[in-house]
Image 1 (cartoon, helix red, strand yellow):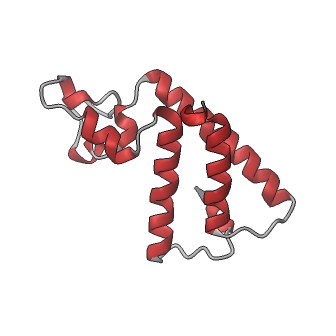
Image 2 (image 1 turned 180 degrees about the horizontal axis):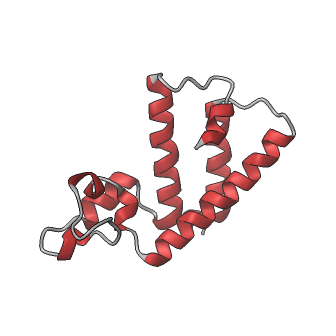
Length: 124
């Protein structure tokens, strides 16, 4: 998410930045399927299912690290939707950068909230 590195208050080592990325990830997941990333894992990780319910992983067997990544539980349609939402939001954000509008991390969160309300699953 190099886009967010353009934020006036971006510091890659700060706790605020780590929290910011978690917020952004959860908002994008919620816009995709009305579940946050932790909710996706909690609901879909199932030891009774093949590969614990994972739909995406590298190799013959999923790893523990792969099991901790919410998008690895998404359906093909959900992945398509998530990818389109991310691409569309980045296109809009690129316009902001081109306009040289100073943006703080909170501004990006606010932009993502507006974007999600218009294009996310919870828009109805």
